[in-house]
Image 1 (cartoon, helix red, strand yellow):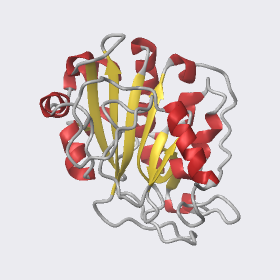
Image 2 (cartoon, helix red, strand yellow):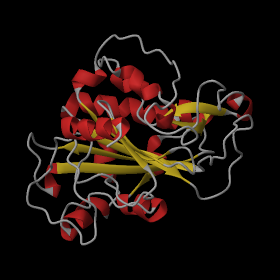
Image 3 (cartoon, helix red, strand yellow):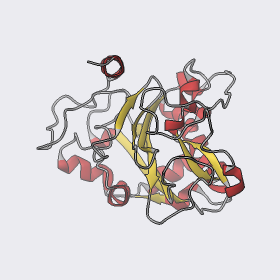
Length: 282
């Protein structure tokens, strides 16, 4: 077994500790369950088999070597992560756990060089500001966790949604977040990147907060999902992007909460959760 594979296996053993329930059946033909604090009801299922699964202290992600971006990123937040006064330095770093060319790179030549001229920010999927209490905050600056995101979106409604998620952590005690890209139309590539890649046309986020200390059933969870197009105006409200989880599944081709029985999945995925979302977003 290679040192890189050993490292990944050890990380899965150390970090994968959160089973939502112990008795839910696994779908026929599905991969083995991975119990991880960043996952709730299972990780997003359906990413390409060639993807690299990366699990760190602060997040887990599925890195697509064709797009050079993560197909999904999952992270678990408590006040321990969100509250603190650490210096949150944006020091971009290459993803160290994959082969050269599988992800965009910060060095020796930055693939995002000149991105600002195209109105792209380096957008964090697991956001830096949510980890100001963690000594591992620099992990979010690996380019595997970064996406080309239009500045108006990144600095406007997407940022406001991330800010509100941190407020939700204060009131709920813990929150699970899943996010990722959509590729529904062609977007201009990063002009100075040396690697073939794909820029997303939109992004999705799913926010999950428990209603009790030990969630075991769908009614023990509140769930809200959002989709925001790259061209979303800076002054847009996150509520404008509110959708049902089923809509994210349809457009991303991913399956969420797949470790739950089908009926329980339906309860979490069918509605837009408008009342609950308005409660913590306004």
